Length: 242
Image 1 (cartoon, helix red, strand yellow):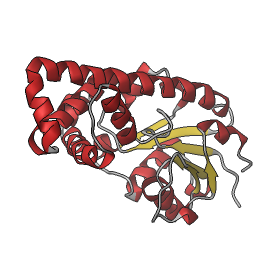
Image 2: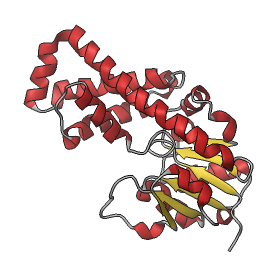
Image 3: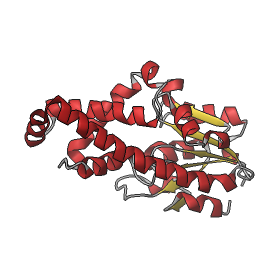
Image 4: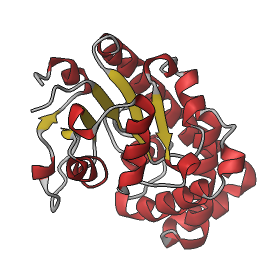
């Protein structure tokens, strides 16, 4: 078995905090006093994500706070039109000023949690830089380089494969291949670390990479056989015996 010389990381839910963005947004909505279920928010989350992917020219200049505000704003717009009746009434009754305050509350909460996750990852990734070539493979909005620079994580990564910049989205193999080409490393000498079995581990496994699943919540119905190693925290990556 080839020696592992490169590590590729997912970003959202992996490097920026131990939870999927949907779950972190959900917690932020509830902290702002908005009663909504995960299933109800999921539709708004997907709609805002789709809009974000289609707005790369605008979003590419955003830092973390502007990105979160953009996404939350579009989530609110979806919920006002297509959310559950009770929530639509709450949002309508709040008026424009009230909705603006709620968007800011949700944004601030999400950004605070994300910043803490990024700071934690900065400490966890530091010891890996001298041992491995490091890269990121992420379905993102075209501004991941800005987010990494803000978080002082950019200095660790020799390759950043941002799907909106490349026009290739996980689980397509091309986005992984783009990162491997940038760091000049073969798949069999690389490992992929991410929180999604379907989007991170399975496609990387098919390319011949070693795979590490950051298991932050149960994912029933997915093939955990795509993961060579399962971890519960990003801190465990440094202890893996390749």
